[in-house]
Length: 191
Image (cartoon, rainbow, N blue to C red; front, side, top):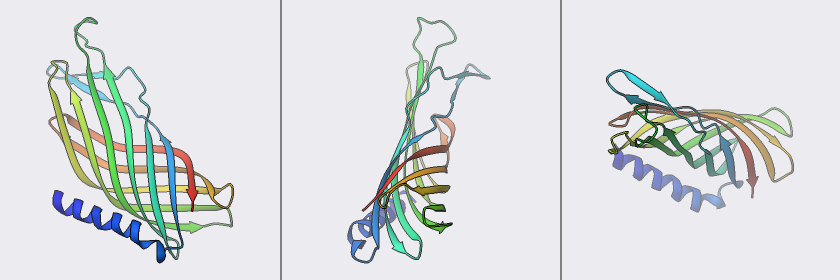
């Protein structure tokens, strides 16, 4: 399944790069995403909450293919959550770092000349790296379906403000279980 994802991703990116002749226009955007909260296991049954608010962002680009359809690829860096060791402040803490890469189809429904709503459906590669209280690191990756919904408000002919929610799936493995879902707001530039 992993090879199929990368082959599909390469084909999608080739379409993004070579498809400008058949596309109406391309776009790129940057969004600030909600960092979310994290818990890490401690002892047999306990958990510890994170103490920081990591910076989370998403960078994406796409091609409008006509008839309100688009192909979009993006990368999200959701930061590192940090955890104090409950056994004592002088003992090593723990951390979890998360990121995602996705490829999705997008359908837009214009409501008027400046405002539209959209939905996305695609695949996401989730990556999670954890360092436990014992200093042991573990890394987990998963490929999951992703869905998203959002709204787009055109500020100028080439600049839009976006608000969206995206669900990238759940990563399970040695680092534990983690659900990737984010609310974000940002700007999109059309070319």
